[in-house]
Amino acid sequence: MPDSAIPPTARPPADVALSFSGLSVGYGDRTILRDIDMVVRPGQVVAIMGGSGSGKTTLLRAAVGQLAPQKGTVQAFGQDLSRLSGDAVFTVRKRMGVLFQQGALFTDLDVYENVAFPLREHTDWPESKIRETVLAKLQAVGLKAAAFLRTSEISGGMARRVALARAVVLDPELILYDEPFAGLDPISLGVTAQLIRTMTDQLGCASVLITHDVQESFAIADQVYLLGKGSVVAAGSPASLSASQDPYVRQFLDGAPDGPVAFEYPETPAYLDWLARQQAGKQ
Ligand SMILES: Nc1ncnc2c1ncn2[C@@H]1O[C@H](COP(=O)(O)OP(=O)(O)OP(=O)(O)O)[C@@H](O)[C@H]1O
Image (cartoon, rainbow, N blue to C red):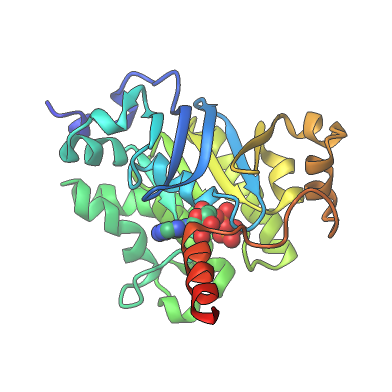
């Protein structure tokens, strides 16, 4: 029986949901992040933080197998993604839920059908089981009564919660969240953060958040990795990072405008080429 046909509850639990080992990733010849070591275990909420352009999305792309390592390995549930065939990567991805920044609900479907969509695509469950599952997931995000609203009738914060219900409808073992707090009001921020923690605890899955939001992620994370200078500059529990005197960590946590975190976008080979051409043209 293919692995994808085994219900999540019947699979042996993986000891490690996601790991990066000696990982370097980038685009073409350019390396964005190097020497990344990270382990995410079931039941953990892990926050990957860093300033704009520090490589958070790049790391997320590597985690889902969209970007191949330049060096080192990415393992999901103990399987090295770069050694798997396309079909096998697809099977591994089915064990992951990914919540993209914009949530991207289908606007021609109502809330209920948006959440039911992955079940209709990936299972042959009877309608009664689909209904039970969809309503349970909507209840978990506090939106059961909104099931039959159109997406145009719900707010941005509600849309984010519907997208979360959809991301967990197949009971993933690993959920990856891309900027889950971006653009939320203070109440929705707290609600979303608590939901991520509760979902992780209830499903026993692992959650990885890509975020800049220090307060909300520190409130729920077990482990935090801070990216900077093309690698991991600090890693540890929220308490240990809060106590850190490292200037880079302090500047990031305190939101200080001056310090070792560069505001300026680094010079890239493409920019240096352009500059050289400009200068040659002037002579
Ligand atoms: N498809 C791409 N091709 C080439 N370079 C890219 C590509 N995507 C991102 N980059 C570069 O990789 C670096 C890291 O970008 P990335 O999007 O991973 O950062 P980030 O930490 O997610 O930033 P933000 O918080 O602003 O979204 C940047 O220098 C960016 O210009």
